[in-house]
Image (spheres, rainbow, N blue to C red):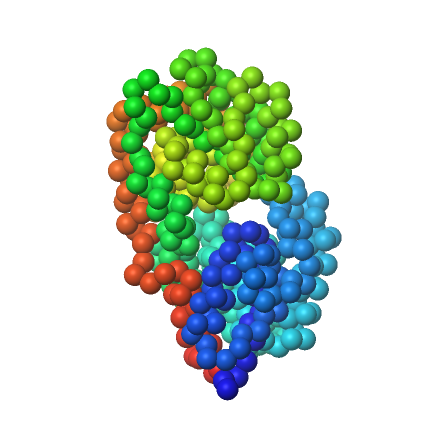
Length: 387
């Protein structure tokens, strides 16, 4: 019987937990022996056998203000996680996204276990701000698994660790693939379906809900009554329902995945919080406007961002596709008028959808992302003299 492969794994958010679950499931198909897990994660990693050191939802924070407020807790959890990994002495450590937490853990573990291979799944946005972080990672990361096609070249340019584009799990999600088949506008006389996506973090929802309320109201005043749908996650349902309680034009709130993907398949346009969901919508072929409100300290730090756009489809296509509204530039009247352009047969809609097709092609890989990440992870382990 082959040796047990002990994997240290740390995921700080739902998206990272899903990536980790795919990676571990694929590792189990490639490694002949048992796979044992130690670290931090959620339901997806739990389904693969991880007993998380603590509830990882504690790490779901947004903005610099929340980071500062939770700093004592973060420091305590960093120490707890690093100590547990050092004691467990895994064969390899995989850190997934959430760099404020995972990278600090990796630095502590590498100091005590200098020969431990460390793989970073999801490249930090060093290409967007604080570029020196790429070179700093050489001290504690052996290989980066990138989910965006432009990141390997960016890491090479910045002098960071070796980086491989492994693809993005969104390109394999059945709901995304199905939604791409339904990009036509509704028949004449039928109202469009518009998605309102204020984010999954409490801070995002509280800051964007008032703007989205006015977007829905203005659009409804100027057009035949549309259908608004607001997908959310179970843990935020009560917060979302409270936020829309006083809206004059109320959206349908959908919670589970089946309802979400049904809404995506029926949607003709969307306005969404800046983040991965913008890429999710682009891959689904849904024209979208990006909205973001930074907290006070976040606004102060904006001048440090060097990238020309925060919308991932724009960066992947290397041209403006998704309109972006941030902070004081965000006006509900502008967003609602963009919705009018995107729910009609206009050049703006056509250009955006054509660009989204380019994004789709660039994001596709021959090997499924989960399997490719497992292959590269085992390659790193072999090169470092592991199993």
